[in-house]
Length: 416
Ligand SMILES: Nc1nc2c(c(=O)[nH]1)N[C@H]1C(S)=C(S)[C@@H](COP(=O)(O)OP(=O)(O)OC[C@H]3O[C@@H](n4cnc5c(N)ncnc54)[C@H](O)[C@@H]3O)O[C@H]1N2
Ligand code: MOO
Image 1: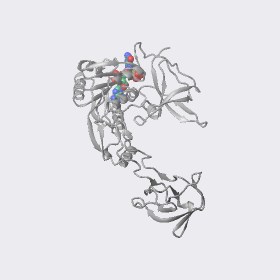
Image 2: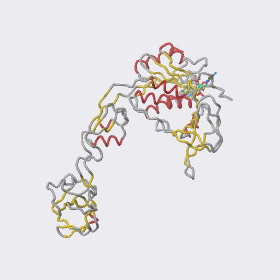
Image 3: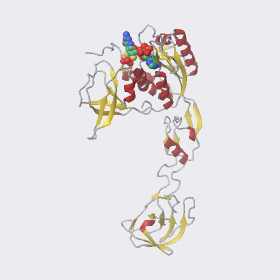
């Protein structure tokens, strides 16, 4: 039996994603921000290091920098004696050089003189007056952090499209960089359509529901660190929907609506979009999310999400988020898919690619297992909230028994 809600001619999910991504032009406006403001921002140029890190050969240990002759095994034998001629601290280098048989006291991070052949930990020597004696054999170039061994001057540190992280900020600081060039954040307009939709402060009448999609979408957009233009709840009224699209077209790079994209009598979103712009495709072989629509206004990209809360969240996450990332100038990374053993039967009719919701866990024998959530309905947001992964079943998959293996995708930081 095929999927009851699948109709012939639905665009395969992967084709929909490729078509949509191919239509996105990355933002090219560049701005300069200070180091402490670049977290989550997208690098707008290929960056090379202006300096060596570390800047100088320096000691990895508190101990002694020695100038020694090494035997054939590149070692200094136990019992060798060195005369102490000075001290090097971090930030206070020893200004002279050593000759064979000499050493200096040295602290972690202090510059190692060019003439020093090795550094030994203080635990491995005995101090006798103005000399030290090795209490074990010592190998060459020990405990010296070489100049440029972390990053060499001129080495590429970040590529255009990289999203800066907290650690990257530290790395940039270690290069003496105080500001970076990043792409402007895209502005994303969001609205929900439906006469039945009410805000938390409203009293519900028969048939009304509390609106949730916009809140999910805005939360995901905030995690993406883009600018959000919240256009609120729009009634099932062509004029009001037209107004919302007109505002979005002048102020936003993309507009995301939910609801009104199916075939119901009040499903006006598609109709208005056809008037003001063009629809690239509508209806895909994806469950949940069949009526997903993608198109363009004069100045903005349009994502029309289905109204059902799970359908809206999954299509937004799977299709709109990668598109917005591309629009932001970010290099796209393919999501990591894993293979897990299902603990329960999985039901599926062929016809659409399923993104079922599951909880993945490591079993006692260290194998990755997944339990499909018992309620897979497109309106059951509570089961999505309990899930930590998608169970992805290809279009022609027909379900499987407990103990069989399926592909899963763990929820990322945008949805999880
Ligand atoms: N005859 C057919 N009917 C439907 C089909 C179909 O192919 N033929 N497709 C079904 C599928 S699949 C989906 S998904 C829905 C999507 O319909 P719409 O995008 O037009 O969404 P609405 O009808 O406006 O709403 C559906 C459902 O979701 C609730 N909703 C809507 N917006 C929100 C919101 N912002 N927050 C919370 N809940 C929301 C709404 O009250 C409805 O219950 O169409 C099927 N029908
Ligand atoms: O595609 Mo709808 O999103 O199955 O409920």
